Amino acid sequence: MRLAARQLSPVARWCLVVLAVTACYFATGQIGIQWAIVREQISPLWPAAGVALAVPMLLGPRFWPGIFLGALLTNIAIGPSLAAVSVISAGNTIGPMLAYTVMRRLGFRNQLDRLPDAVLLVTIGAIGGTAVSAVLGTGVLVLDGALGAGDFWSTALVWWTGDAMGVLTITPLLLLAPRFRLPTRISLARWGEAIALAVVATGAALLASTAPAKLFVVFPVLVWAALRFRQAGALLCSLCVCTFTIFAAVRGHGPYGSYELVPRMLHVQGFDATVGMTALVLSTIVLQRDRATAEITEAWFQITEMVDMIAPRQSLRSAMTQRKSDELAD
Image 1 (cartoon, rainbow, N blue to C red):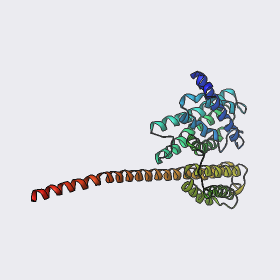
Image 2 (tube, rainbow, N blue to C red; image 1 turned 60 degrees about the horizontal axis):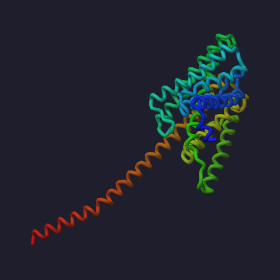
Image 3 (tube, one colour; image 1 turned 180 degrees about the vertical axis):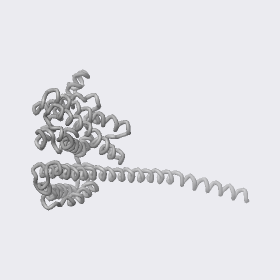
Image 4 (tube, rainbow, N blue to C red; image 1 turned 45 degrees about the vertical axis):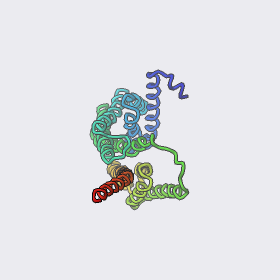
């Protein structure tokens, strides 16, 4: 397989990657459609937005046609018209590509091991780029007559927050994926703690989605995940919590059932955004602390080695100096 891949021309490899990106976007788009609450295509959690931002970061900006084709295939079956779907697909491509360009110019790194990287992902990736896609897509629906002008802001808000949640929950996990390695030497106690965290996180997510509101129960779990399992654990817990709360909100269960659609989505999206940002920022701070500790430890070992190398020489020099002084005295 590797030999065959090497024999492919650059154009053929580019086409294969574009098709793979198209398939990934389409698959995640179908997941988002299952939760659609406006025109069966605007969802409070749109995982495809997270995929769209991760593609240029991981593969490079030249594979943007895969994002456009994936968005086109996702929306073409639900309309409203080919022209409107084309513009919506263009907006779904322009938003993440614009966010990627700005983030790269500001020094964003895929490792997500610095606090500025997490801040850029939240502000530029999850808030700025998705707003472009939401406003452009909602405006096209209004101009095409598929949506009333009075519904513009409420629809754009749901669209925007859904894309933002996709970026907050999916993009960090995809950025961490290339560095993932299967653990080789993990103690039974560590496995037990991981299983306990998964059970407690699921239970906390379910409890937070019931009435009366118990939303606060998820934050100790996020702290546990970030401190013990770093970004992977915290982000997976965040995705679990956001999925359960959005599922409950879409069906009007739990603490969200007494609200109308727009206030309901505002409440759940505000909570999910807080959970996502807490998981991302806290785990990044913990990772940055670990890196600083490792650098200090390494510097201490280097200083210790230098002292051990200098001490014998310094002792020999002192002995020779003392001997010369004794000879001169005699």
